[in-house]
Length: 175
Image (cartoon, rainbow, N blue to C red; front, top):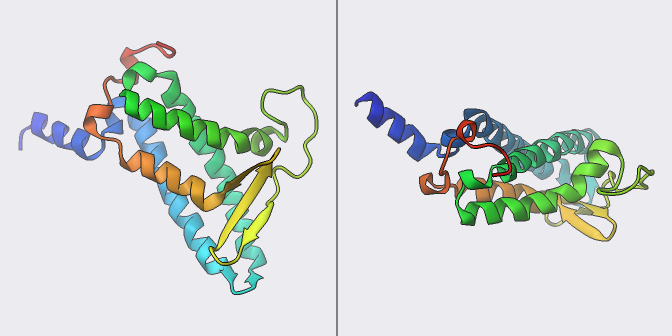
């Protein structure tokens, strides 16, 4: 296989590398974190009980996952011309959803507001024992851990080579 063929195969298997090898690596790390969080949810919620140590680990990993997934999608959304319209739309939808949790998780503040304290928005709002899931409620918007993990996994798995139009180094942000 020639070098050109090897590079073409890499872009086919990992299209986000064409945009940024760093972003690709970050997405892979977040997807691994997603799998670990899902395993912990499955193992920490049994019947009507929740393992406290597992619960703390889930919360801590999900906190990191929220911050990381927001930053990856924020970066991608700043380089709109690097991506297809379809991918830009999916990134924007996900970024808006995860941003609801990002500010309370990162700064203990509401998004787009004067700095003021929040109540329990960074706390788990609900436990779904049947589906082994946790949820958060930020000003009436309830977000499920499994739902956010699945949405991120879905749109990142659907990235095709024709969705990545340019390398981020050749395109200024915001263009």
